Image (tube, rainbow over all chains, first blue to last red; front, side):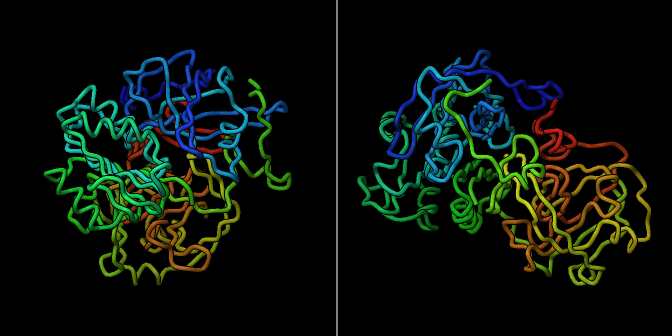
Length: 250
Length: 201
């Protein structure tokens, strides 16, 4: 299901029912969408969604898929509430289980990882930028548990961490997976975590914990976050061709 | 299909007809790129015009900036669904590059190449006649690295992935050869008004 295999074939819009909504944090919820025709995907890819007002006005957005492809039939999207947004407040304040929206995809062939890509994997996520990295981690645990992976996950506080319990559990249970948390406005709860923003020292430690240069690095978050992560990674000697980025916001 | 409870936020009526289908207006200038921002010093910067594999003209930063300068104000549209109106750019029109090189377009297609290995295909017809430039300034200031500085292609009438950041050359090709995103499922041409986002659209 790489992009080339889909080349030239139009991907239609289709209806998807919101099967379930899970509150992740005060500002973030997960939507579990069940489309009429579920398409397999590569972890890291995104889904386009479309909302239509009664007069025909439409709004489209793209959201990374957070679920693993093994969860057939469903796509999990992680939606952060942007107070001045047009679409995210709808998902937070209006949408309920049983509602239907339109979706298209998943799409994207670069910020994507499949088991055959191998590792070690360095994953760096800021805020809701962790969503596509969750898909990669969930897939890795099932499809390639021997691939070493480290997630450096930055958030404001302990209670802002999306999928926190799952990630802590994976850190305990999965031999090849390491979790390091960077909390910019909170105290660290575990010795390997930090109570500050991601910086060069933290990235250097993450590389050391990984035990070797990453074959691929995925960085996802707001643009200033991605810049603040990738610049020190280049200073630390990583090959820019191995670093893939997904950025959002201004 | 009407979405229950969705009303939406419409753009002001005076700009509504400047926003292509599926796009939303932004006042920010979001940054999208596939990898880290490359570090390009002006001493190392150059721009090469090629016909197939053959270089026909190369400009240093100094020589490039001595070419005729043009300012344009255009609406831009990113495939990630934002549009930004009235963006002010300054740079060198592709027409003026060809004039300085003393060539007519030898083929109908090009690939724009970048310092980070990125490439994107643009037909010649979309580059000439004042339709495209190699931009070095945005809003009166040198283009910042995260927005593609020192120089980026500006083809404002196509989705913005065609406006290659960190451009270092333009290559005429015999065929319409897909570039980086075009090989990864994105549309070969990318007209926002026909919503040509993905292959097959």
